[in-house]
Length: 213
Image (cartoon, rainbow, N blue to C red):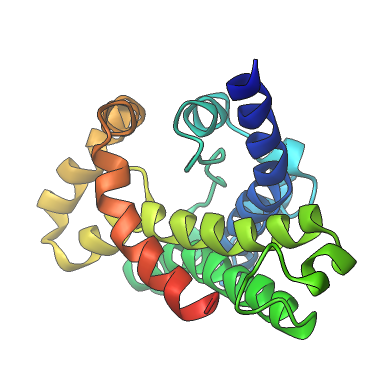
């Protein structure tokens, strides 16, 4: 029972920064695409801060199983509206991880402004501001760094695959991106075997050492 209660508490702390992270991530994709002339995200109703429009069942399941990472439904975009399709698609892909990095910095600045850095959960100031609030902000740093790193992995349909495809010859890039249909299963396999954590955790520890010190 204690383990179950701790798991529920952990997921509750993660919920706010995770929902904010995936919402801003997908909104950034859609906003940049719209700025490049693509009306598709707006027509799909994805230029919104409503997280329910962005949640993905597989991504939420992976979050529950790994308690580390998950993902949202990709925002639909149409590169035919771009003036420079290959280059602009990379800008759209990079916007999501960039939003997560900015959110991680924002959560770290929030903790710094409250005088909670370096983090010491036993310090009077942590009790004053409320440990749940401080833990949510600290989780916001970790989750958004993890989301940025995760989405930069070169596995279709993740954002990293769009960046890799940009440097490949068009024919090879098309075949590479066609692997998207297997992407969710590959990601789930990596998550269940621990390979995903093996990739993400070193970067996460470095970011925590820098931002939460």
